[in-house]
Length: 133
Length: 118
Image 1 (spheres, rainbow over the protein chains, first blue to last red):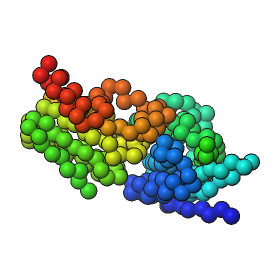
Image 2 (tube, rainbow over the protein chains, first blue to last red):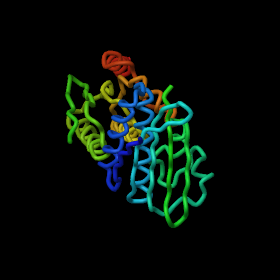
Image 3 (cartoon, rainbow over the protein chains, first blue to last red):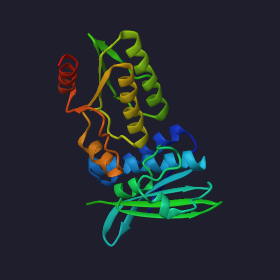
């Protein structure tokens, strides 16, 4: 059974709600405080990307399981403009907002698994997972 | 929400104990610069002991307020950054290299005193 909790992101306060939800779930799943901080920060960055680039979208958080490992999965989706060149946004230091947000490479480093799927004109989905050690 | 700024002799002391949203962070930036202007404070300690997460936005606001205060002639030290926060910031790729830091409030005040008197 997998319970998913979601937060709609359309303003700055939703970013705070999304990361509070993430911290609570990370704590419940048994993550230590360093990984709790990593997960919370990753959610904050993803939520801010939605707010800045897509205007609105959704952050969903659920428990993950794979080959006996347990973890936490973040699913960030929006119906924004999409990303034209995914390879480019995954380069360190790339920004279109003039330095707001550490960008996706930072989120990838904070998490264990990172998948991005984006279609220009229809939106972006990012799935990032952290496994319990 | 407003973050209280305390005056102690020629220093300003701030301890951030709330979950920082964007508006609160930006309001704090403005409040601190106004307080420096009004009091003529020479040194500022921003204590982050109770802050359990700093994302790239909050890091930018904090880094900016250090540089802005410097422009006005006041020295800022960030203190009490938690281990989990330090690890996360470096993972994110944020080094805050040019921002003065100290382990705790006491060492932060010592650092300011050395720089202002020395």
